[in-house]
Length: 315
Image (cartoon, rainbow, N blue to C red):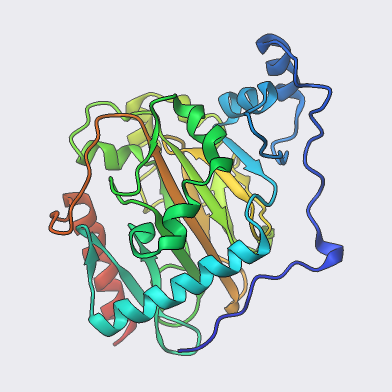
């Protein structure tokens, strides 16, 4: 199997400094909100032992946060190595689903079968299982509440994504959607609070595609959350969207109820690759899955679309 290019950051392409909050730690909620309103939407923060008042106010305002290089280069490399090992095992064993969630394989730029999306990733990696529970993420967990937990065996578990522009790729992009749709299919009347924690493995600029979000839409009504756009099919840029620029090791937090999408890269081949991993944080009723769990209706539909796409590309 072809070795993929490692994530790199050259000295002249270091990220802008994270916000210096040393003089802002004691702000009261009203002052923190005022300061957050004055910050640009591209503000980068530093993850410390506690979520700061300004970070909380920025999240409340926009629905997302970007934390500067929370994972070390060694951790990024370890995770990507584990994913390659998992991919080989899944292909050798012909595994199609994990805990009822389909695994999607496309074709990489060298024409080989290539893992593009899988859920419950941490179940198959001892390193990842420990990584997502590292103490550094405790402040993120408490953003939801003291009873919040990592849903690594619930819903879709820890999801690993790989996007690439190449012939046979199933996922060069992903249309607008909210995670509220998933909650509806899991028989929840109201989408519960949920923060998606995303770890990013590549340097992603505007022309590299990547995550786009609609700030503030995490507070919309359930109706707007389900109908503002056509879930997964609407892909056109929105005049109010924000591009989330990332460096390897960056951590993003975004409320799953907000509208978000993945823009395709303007490049092709390996140059277009974008890798990310999402960890769901949930606080509603505990509903773990087991290896024999059925595939949810919405996932069966989406999987059918993906397999039809794979058949079409392979004609």
